[in-house]
Amino acid sequence: MKFEQVSEHIWSLEAWILIPVHVWVVVDGDGVTLVDAGLPFMARGIRAFIDRLHAGPLQRILLTHGHSDHVGSVGDIVKHKSVPVYAHRIELPYMEGELPYPRRKRPEYNVVKGFAQPLYEDQDANLERVAGLKPYLTPGHSPGHVVYHHEQDQVLLAGDLFTSKRGKLHRPMPMFTADMTEALRSSAIVRRLNPQRLEVCHGGPVFQPADQLDEYIKKTAASFSIPSSLLE
Image 1 (cartoon, rainbow, N blue to C red):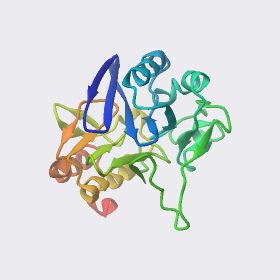
Image 2: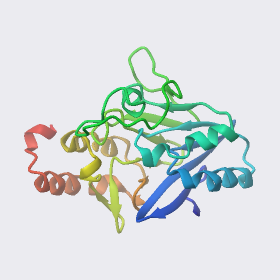
Image 3: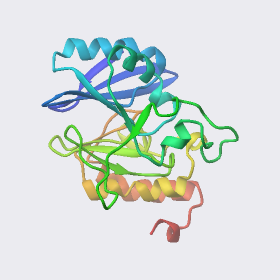
């Protein structure tokens, strides 16, 4: 696995299996938070990196969503380091196999029922901050997809809201995206937050992504014949 410090508090861990797969380690005052858990073979490397970092114990795992390439190592990690796992409440029935993901014929049993907990929400259903990260619901790639914004470091951990190519925003993988129109609407979070750096699971970093957003939306909408009226 390849390790890179991307900001003061965040490290990116990368493995390859035909395409890059990234997870992120975030250091906060109470220890370490893992964002996404990659594929099963990444578990040992993730655990070893956290131990070598000497930044405190692993406190929690936050998931952007429940697809298998984002939850693959959670079982092994939790077996060795007993910590809670969180995802959006909307995502839980899909990742637990209660419902099939949209556009899928069969349900996926990516975690056992009750293994993951819902992210905390306030009385207005706004997701609460955790470990220096502010979660935002960004459905489209999956029904309960979430991005995590590290406000101090101005880094957005965007999961599969996008992929990237040569530093440019690129659409999420169509084969695995539930609703591309909704994913495009969710991409507006980049304009709202205006991060300096955006990280994706499949691809390299994108700097000043808000500057690319209009072009990205226009190009992707044209590729999928999405009327502009549906993106308002």
